Amino acid sequence: MRESFETLRFVVADGVATLTLNRPERLNAFTAAMHAELRVALDSVRAGREAGLVRALVLTGAGRGFCAGQDLSDRQVSADGTPPDLGRSIEDNYKPLVLALRNLELPVIAAVNGVAAGAGANIALACDIVVAARSASFIQSFAKLGLVPDTGGSWILPRLIGPARALGLALLGDRLSAEQAAQWGLIWQCVDDDQLAGTVGDIAAKLAAGPTLGLARTKQAIWSASTRDFSEQLDVERDLMRELGHSEDYREGVAAFMNKRSPAFKGR
Image: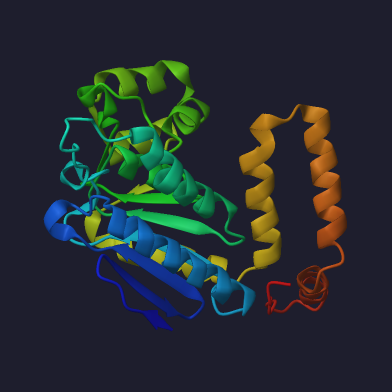
């Protein structure tokens, strides 16, 4: 299963969709055209998930960078000097993108192969599992342009690393190494550069072979937990467990455990 794009590479193999941002000469910075193609690609992921062909998604970048954020040359000031409407850009492009990744009913893994800056950093952090090469780094570069962290950054950062570190990153715009990001709990893992592809491939294969309906509900429960109090979250767990208790994967998991064999999950 393949799709042809100008700014992306998209391949599905063995239940894993790999979506590669492919503007390496611009460190894979976002343009309106890339956003349009990302919407199409994510529609294909959803369709593949419904057909049972896609069970995990890997998001990465081509070349030496993951994503440098917005390509500023793609935003033009009008002839009368009116600046671009950045709010419209968020509403039309970045908000739908980050929500699409969050709402996909399958695990999303970010393979951060190089610098992730601005919206590029926050797109990576919106994924469910983030693995970064040791040479990679994360930069909240918005302050250098007089802007605020967007693409969910102002929500994600304090929840992952606390307000003190979030404010330091956001106000100073300093580069955070992948190793420090892992030590802070901002990302799942930092690995040597030559181990990134293999590590992410192993994680994606494990998730794709897993009970993906249960994984999707786990993702849903954890991402939404911060909006509820403890008692409400217990009710969410109850409702999701009730649903999953009727799933084929649960029955298969129990049968495999009782018979001491490997399970064959189908994601339903």
